[in-house]
Amino acid sequence: MIIVMQSEASPEKADAVVQRIEDMGLKAHVSRGEFRTIIGAIGDETLLKPEYFAGLAGVESVMPIMKPYKLASRDFHHEDSVVEVGPFRAGGDAVSVIAGPCSVESEDQVRTTARAVRDAGGTMLRGGAFKPRSSPYSFQGLGEDGLKILRDAAAEVGLPTVTEVLDVREVELVARYADVLQIGARNMQNFRLLTEVGQVERPVFLKRNPAATIEELLMSAEYVLSEGNHRVMLCERGIRGFDKSTRYLLDLAAVAVIRRDSHLPILVDPSHATGRRELVVPMALAAIAGGAHGVMVEVHPDPEKALSDGPQQLVPEAFRQMMAELGPIADAVGRTLQRAEI
Ligand code: PEP
Ligand code: MN
Image (cartoon, rainbow, N blue to C red; front, side):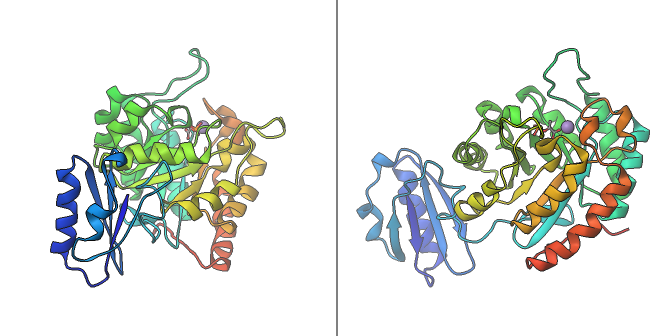
């Protein structure tokens, strides 16, 4: 249920509504917008009746929310949410570019990539230290050593880091080194992991599972939000298709659906979606033209030798070219491509 306060209602009146929600054993989430405060009552809604709130001072309207997610919904928070990561913003009119290798492989590899990403204007450095691999015999990542390599290389160039946390047992460890916790596609519905990252002071980058509906993605975001972590960024990274020309099927319509139904930033990963480097740049441009708040792309100094996802990683020069092409597209749709300072 959502309780919309009158625009002139004092904070004390909002507090009284929160108190009433809590007295009924539910949680209250307060969203203070530019014009008015909206309060969400989270929990078993059958315990609530609109008339419990309609009579309280300062209440303008009371609406049951029919969607299965609430805090992630635009009904609850009308304006786009903006997630701050270091000096950068994700969401609203900002376009963010997260780039870096699929896997952290060596100090040299990550430092070279970090410099290339920063020099081209990328805003966050990515790289996996814990890798979710289909085969147990494939490279699984360098673990904590990889986290250190990523952190040090990023610090040298002044970029925040994004890296995947695979397991509840490693949330604390990854949060010690990384600025943003990535929940990979395979873990999108690992509800214990979502609950855990919901309790950590780090933004979460939540990737859509290739077999998940948009509603399921938003329900997963709700797990994180309902624990009190409001810094959630979503990522469309392709769903299962039937055509082998691309690794997955990039669902760009999901960007428009999510922007309509949710206030959370939505980024697009054209690297995993297409699986082929020559398709990455066109799909990155299309994503920004279509309203995405940014892209995540894989970049490797020598993709032929990459230990994972070689065929989809851009060489630094191609990444630089992509950044040059993204600027005018962002301008054309009234957005601002953020750029790291060199
Ligand atoms: C990744 O970004 O490193 C990754 C493994 O992607 P996904 O979870 O989307 O497959
Ligand atoms: Mn990868």
